[in-house]
Amino acid sequence: MNLLRFTTAGSVDDGKSTLIGRLLYDSKSVFIDQMEAVEKTSLRKGLERIDFSLLTDGLKDEREQGITIDVAYRYFATPARKFIIADTPGHIQYTRNMVTGASTADAALILVDARHGVVEQTRRHSFLAGLLGIPNVMVCINKMDLVDFDQEAYDRIVVDYARVKAGAGLRHVAFLPISALLGDNVVDPSPNMPWYQGPTLLHHLETLEVERPEGAGDFRFPVQTVIRPHSDTHHDFRGYAGRVASGKIALGDAVTAYPSGLTSAVASIVLGDMQLEEAHTGQSVVITLADDVDISRGDTLATGASPRMEQQPLATLCWLDNSPQRPGAKYVLRHGSAEARAMLANVEGVLDVEALTFEAATQPLTANSIARVQLKTTKPLVMDAYTQNRITGSFILVDETSGATVAAGMLS
Image (cartoon, rainbow, N blue to C red):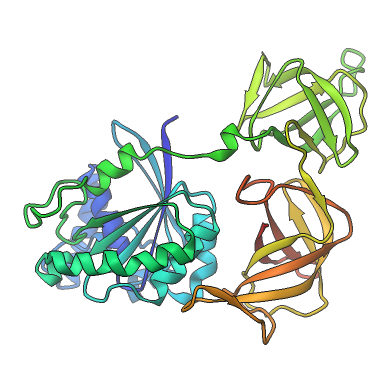
C-alpha cells in the first residue's frame, strides 16, 4: 500500500490546523455536511472567510481557544497515495503530544510564520524530528500573504534554518512558501509567487519517497505469545506469534533466539489459514521452528547482525508525566513484548532548546523534558539502536504504583 504518514508541527498560531483543513478541502477530502457545519460556524464567528482550522480542531477546548491541544489524526487519499496526518500541538507544554504523534511518521511538516521567522518552537520541533529519526522534513513558510509574498522574507528564513538543520541532524529538508488561508502552493501553484518554481505541498507529499530502514534491515521478531493448541490433532504444534519488526524471513532460514542464543531453522510461516513462503516487515504471523527451542513471550527471533543485550543502556528520554521524576524510583520498562524493572541510574544531560545541546541536569525531569539518561534494568534488553530500528530501539517507562506511562525513550 502506498501510504505516507506525516506529522505537522510549529509554534502557536503558525496555521497548522488551517493548513491541514485547506489541504483536506482543496483535495476534495471533506464531506458536504462537514463543510456546511464549518461554514455556519465561521459565519457565526463573524469571519469573512471559511475557518479551515475547524475541520481539524475537534476538541471543545480547542475550538474555544483556537489552539491544538491533543494529537488529531486525519485520513485522506488522492489517486496517487493514501495519507495519515498527525496534527500535533505547538505549545511547549504539549511537547510530549508531538513525540507521540511523530513517533511513526515518515515525514514532518514544520510551519514557520513568514513574519516571525525561526523561533524557539521551530528549533524544538526540528530537534524532535531529528531525534525521532523522521527522514524527511518540509519547512512550510506560511502566511506569505501577510508579507506581500516577498521572496526576501522567504530567503531569510531558509538561511536562518540552516543552523537548525545542522543542530537537529536533519537529513532531507525542503522549503515551500505557502498561504494556508488563501491556498497558495498548498494544492495549486500560487499566481502570487512566480519566483517560486518548486512543487506544491500536495505534489511534494504525493511524490515523496518513503524511507523505512526496517524493511531492508536485519530480521527482528519480538515474540508476543507462544501458541500450544491443546488437542490430539495439534499436540506437537508449537508456534511463536508476533509482528515482524524489521527485515524478512523465509522457510528454511536459520534464526537465533535471544537472549538464550539458541539457533534453529524456520519450519513454517502461518498467516491465518495460509502457509507463507516468507514474511516481511509489518506482517503479523506465526513461526514454527525445526527444533524444540525454549522460547517465551518477550524473547526475540533474529538473523543477521546480533542485537545488543544490555542491562545499562544509554537512551534519550522524553518525560511524559505531570509528576516530576523521583530520583531512585523504580519503573516497569516495556520494550516491545518484553518487560523488566528499571531505574534511571544517571541523567547525563537535559536538552537546552535554544542551544540545541544537552546541559548538565540541575533538577529532576519534569513534563516535556528531553534528556540523555543511563538506565539500569533487572535483566538484559535485546535491543538495537533507535536509529537502526524504531521498534526494537524504543521503550516506555511505566510507574509501578499508578500504572501511568511516565516516559518514552529511544535507545542509543
